[in-house]
Length: 488
Image 1 (tube, rainbow, N blue to C red):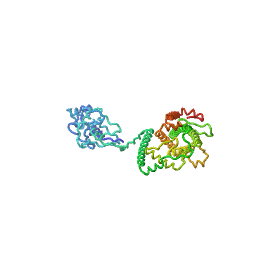
Image 2: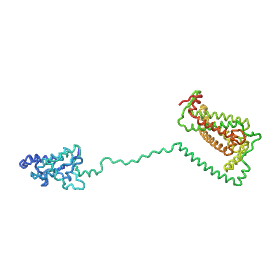
Image 3: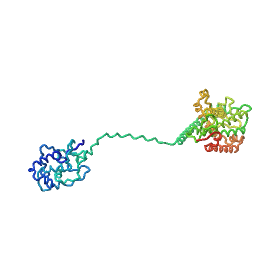
Image 4: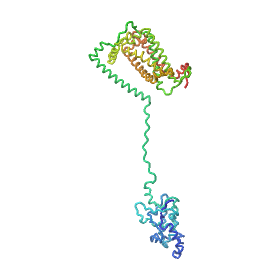
């Protein structure tokens, strides 16, 4: 059911029909008013003489202010009221009643439809006289514009244009507006890539190490000025005496073993780091033999192959040490090696380094470092790597329980870091304590100061660099295919 307001023209609506029937029953009283109204020439006296008397029993709403105003969206009305009011013709006071239904605003309400009370414009009283009181006369004279069409069925009528601003200013009805939602959290920035982050952390670690090293140097230089520390350095100069019959000098095989060891160690550390950090291997390798061969990455195959060559080279090295008596130079033979190692370390930190005579004897700190590297770190790397590889017997449940793979992983990586640190310190001391003489000891098998050992060392660096760049799938695949199947 659609709500419809009261008609805008007084006297229009259902009461106008009753008035029309009453006029038809009393033609004498009406005179010629119907004809005049039909011809549209009778003036409306209601405009000049005031409103007509309200018939008995007729309900009439209060006049609306701004009755001449058009509803929003309709065409402007012509100035019909002024033309009608200026006419000198006279007629009955109620002659406008029969013509009222012709006005679009006087359309009778649909039965059953609710009619509301007229609304007054904001700021005016409902009882105030309308400024456009001549609008009913214009409707009765038949000069109203056709643009004022009747409101569509189902729409609410009765609002004037004057009341439209007040309606527009009113708050909109309906569901309450949703509260403003909090802005979505911004996506976290990607930040620097992993390589940049690692480089930044490495830089911070390097700066921290330099600070610690500087503090250690200052502390050592202060300690050597103390009288008790000076007495300790005099008693333990930094090296232990070798047993009788210890060999003098370094043989040529030791230089070749040294080169092979460095070459293999560099590639083992590189491939081991790739195995640890690679997400998608570039290729796979499957052994030809075995009941259930397991596919592994070609990088792991390279790492294990280099490990095997390194173990073979290390085995040869241990045998030659034992046969030639060179083991006396790298194995502690007396307990004074420990205080002498402390004395040598203190001298290194104070930058007053001990006298080097590696052709005859290493200082105690070197002896302990070589011993730990050859007889402790190398076996730990080999055993932990063997436990982590597929060569470990899967049926040995008791041995697996005693030596779980988690323990091997916890050992293998720190041992690799030890080897990296040992290589860095070893090369730094070789180059800073008489590079030409030390390189001749290691690569020339002679105790002289010339460039022979240096060029041999330089050639070994070229071979190591070539192996570094050659360790890629394009070169490794043909070699790996000789021992197994290479695929994706």
